Image 1 (spheres, rainbow, N blue to C red):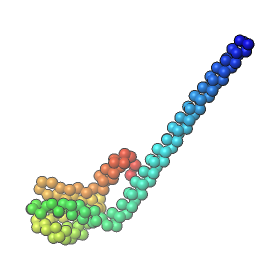
Image 2: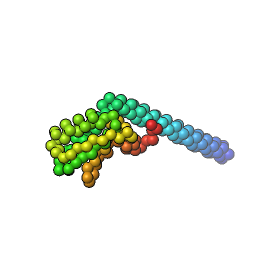
Image 3: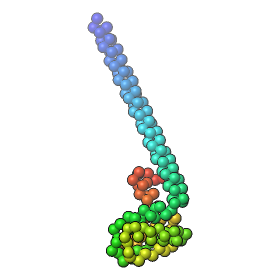
Image 4: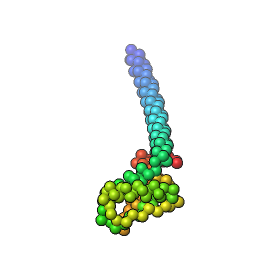
Length: 161
């Protein structure tokens, strides 16, 4: 009887060892599957961010190409709101936008009560829609590449142009 009981105990111990081994293998397999699922989720998120950034670049680029003075006007409004006493402003834009930008700047200066001297200069190296508004002790730079870099940095991604 004692031999039978020892045999049962030994069989039960072996069954427990096999069960424990099976549970270990099962937990390792589950951990592997979860890690694979997490990796796929990260890859999908990265792809989604990349698509969103490329789409935003396309839409923003098309809008900027269609209305480059809109971005310049935004920067000018922000600057003119606080610069009524400044004696002169220099606005640098792309060469092809000088006349239009000058008309826009004169209109905005009138609207904002700016009475100083206003000079609009062309710069062939500037992108259409970019602008630098400078005064004696400061300035504003509106640069599409910098804005894109800041957005990408905020997203924590490195999407190629």
